[in-house]
Every structure is written in C-alpha cells, then in structure tokens.
Length: 278
Image (cartoon, rainbow, N blue to C red; front, side, top):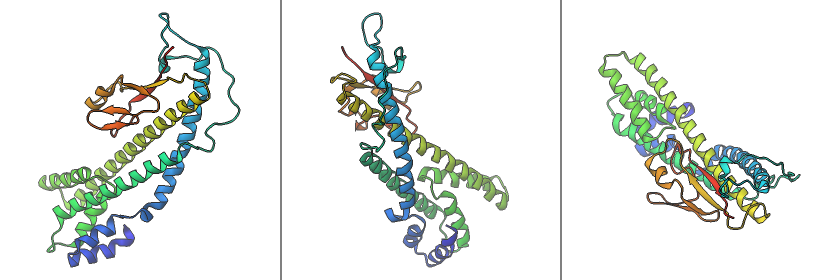
C-alpha cells in the first residue's frame, strides 16, 4: 500500500469512502493474478505428490490381503505393508490430469474469499475510525494494519488499540504494540489458510487416487470412503464421524450440506479412510 498512500489520503480528504475501499481492496481477478498463479502451482505439486503416493500405497496394501482375526478388513489407517507389491514405473499423476479443475476452482474461491474479507475489514476500520476532523494519516495507518485480515480480526486490532489508549499508553507505543499484534494475526491467518487448503487438496487427491486404483483393479468396485473425525473434533465433525459413502459420492452434513470430504471448516483436520468389503 505504500505506493497508494497519496491516493488514499486524497480520498479520505474528499470523504470518498468508495474510492478508498477500492484502492485498498482489489476486487478483480487481475489484481490477484500473480497470487492465483503461484497458488495453483503449489497446490498442483501437493496434489500430484499426494495422489501418486496414495496410489502406490494402495497397490501394496490391497495386494497384501490383510484382514484381522475375525475376517474383517482392517481400516486403511491401521494397515501395515507386509508384502511389497511391484510399483508401477510410471507416475499415474505426473500430468495431474484430475486436479486442474478442482485446484483452479479452489484457488479462485480462496481469492474471492480473501478479497471479500479484505473489503469487509477495511469497511469496519472506516466505519469506526473515519473522522473528517482528524488527520487522515491516522486512518491510513489503521487501514494498513488490517489489510489481509478478516473483519473479526480487524475488529480485534481496533479493540487492542482502544484498550491500550484507555490504559494511558503513549501513542507511539500504542502503534508499535498494535502493529505487533496485527503481524501476529496475519501470521495466524496465513497458517490457517495454508493448513486448510493443503487438507482440501490432499483429500481430493486421495479420493482421486482411490478412483483410479479402482479402475485399475487395485481395489474392489464397491470400495467406499469413511469420514474419520479428528482426535479433538468440533460438533460439526463429530456428527460426520463414521459416515460411509461410495468413493464417487459426497458426504452429507446436516449443517454444511453435501461435502466431498475434509476440511469442512477452517482448522479442520479430519480425515477419510478407505472402507473395503469382501
């Protein structure tokens, strides 16, 4: 935003809030194209690696014919490879043939979400801090702190500033402490996005590998996928735990509707396992 400070100040002085928001929060795909391209590149690498490793693992595990003492097939996450199957030489997912559409849709949705969140955060700052009688530089500083955050996170930054002022802290220190807190929230959001998107891509890659393995005869035609909630699940995930459907069909959530698999919400670390029947 450094190169846009002058335009921001001019918009504030005119009281042109719409222009100010548009300067700060890009609303078109072109504005975020470099981010979009890099995101697609990274997610594609994750997808290819996940799908290929899962496919090769399936070849070993299924050929091993591992069952427990009662004759039931052991869950995939409990299996151990006891006989090495010959790995196919080719990487079935080297060209990532199944992932392009999913990854681009996922990345595009993320760009839209980030743009919306950014605009909402800036609107919240303007709503609370815009005052034509005060120096516009102060508003610019507040906006810079929240760009990239959600509205809720932006509100947290503003609340922290207000509490520090109420405590009698001098303005210079308030700005330092506020910037430090803002940086922390930015880091947490980046980690949340990275974790959530990685889980989404790995889930889709895993399901794709299962479909390809089924078509190649490595797993039964009636193979299913099962939702496994994390060790510390939320109510949404708890309700999904144990649900089993065909690997071609989505899961059903009472609150979220049809979902292909985890993540069902930010920070979701649920998993899916392959359910095989004799």
